[in-house]
Image (cartoon, rainbow, N blue to C red; front, side, top):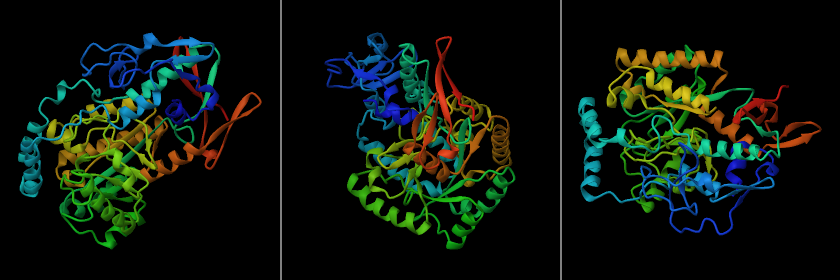
Length: 446
């Protein structure tokens, strides 16, 4: 039950002293419950969990007790974290025939729809999204706050004055940001060079997700040009028709074809079209990392969200969640070019020392307002890199780091701790401590 906590912090096993209460969880059915004020969880808790997150939730924190240095919990933290990350809390109802037919018709006719019509149809599809209380908009940090609460409880036992762990990012970086571009049309493909010029003017490299089997044909020369300039190429769905995850049988057939393009493109990453997903099926892919799971999916066709701003493993695949609003949703669904929402999301994610990930489409940078908004965003990120130690990286670099970190170990060295493992020279020891009964992180000085 301690695995998820240990994977998150990469602290020595001895500091994860949690135990499941005898006979708990005794309920077969999962439900929503609270774990302290403002933190919603989902799963088996030994409490009478609720069917809806809007109900008055029982608080599992009231059931926590301490025996010596051990925190006795009424739930399994790894199970709860997995339920949130893998979106198992989402009610899995098959789409009714009318809705499924509407989606099929939409994707069949989508190429002929002007943006204004698509905008109206998508707003109708997403009607009522502002009334959804969970996951919490515009950034949900439930998984991260769950682990913080457990760290706080451990420190409150008084057994340890400070708990060492391996800092989340390399070389004293406070947080991380990645810029990604999904290329949806031939017009977007033609705009790649100009977009790389924009990014390079701020010294920000990015990844381009290319649709392999529909809409346009990408030349080998274009792929090589992107890579030669220091950018990444990843696979974007198969046909981007909204049907990749319709059935497991169909998915396996498509996944086999996608794996061929992973090899052909020389890619390590993947993103599905329109962020449709089923994380339970990711083991059919041969890529290293996926970028298809939104943190909060209120403005996406498929509801849910992984409720974390940190990368996490789904089997051998690393998930790099989408943690900010897409440019299309900002410009066309919310109808604004203001930076306010992006800035709010950036601030919340950096408070959590998390991953700030963006999707900006070359297809939708076809107006002065859109280009100006994107330029302002690049300027913001560049400033944070200089003034707030933000690590701006390629998705593949984040994948490489997170895999190295997952294999590192902390070794006691007299009164200090040392990190062992490949890449340890870039890693930093951090400490979790209590300050005015609040959780605080500090980095060990070199």
